[in-house]
Picture 1 (tube, rainbow, N blue to C red):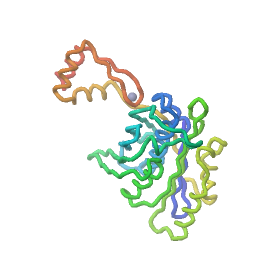
Picture 2: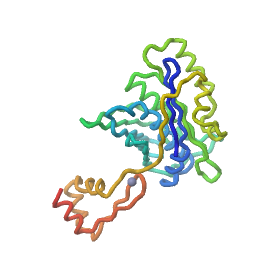
Picture 3: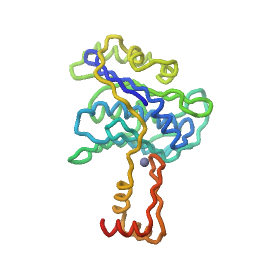
Picture 4: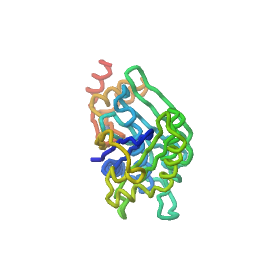
Length: 284
Ligand SMILES: [Zn+2]
């Protein structure tokens, strides 16, 4: 189980995330190689932090989709706003070159766009920005700046062990509320510039409060929430997706004795017999 803590420090909203278990579960399900693990883990952690802003709002689901030209192809991360997160990665084993100790996230992601979808009762809000670096943290910060006009800084990190498993993952996010002074902006920029790798701090045993202390010691905790990798797919949602297929695709399904649909987020397989499919199409 991971945790996010939200705190306030003057006009600064500070958030900290420890997401080691969440990111390790994503790695286990998708069997990602180290740079893909880091890319997906940063995206999940960034979404976990960003979604805190909408906790008490009418937003029911947030999707961040990185459609990219790098060998990873696509990363999609989602939350149902109940502390549950899931991820999809098109190519879990992208080619890369080892240059130094740092995982080449920008190399496997490359150029592309970040699409963000917010689902509300009345409809879906979509925004899109080009990626700045493919390193994920800057890209999400740029999206937040363009879509919400909020200047902010993210630090997101994932550390893997010699077997490729996630040793530590976490993040920090700070943004300024209206009315912040130039001094506060400067101070925040300075503190973020001097922050060490978040994943190394998590690996060294720092908890969320200790992570926040690296930015400021004068904050007040607002709230704390748990986060975990838990898919919310169901037989009903898969059946709905089948019914909404184009007529030609539906016809193809009817030619099979049975159809197996694998959830792209958790790998769970749902089997439908031809009789069941026929029944679904009759009702749908
Ligand atoms: Zn699923």
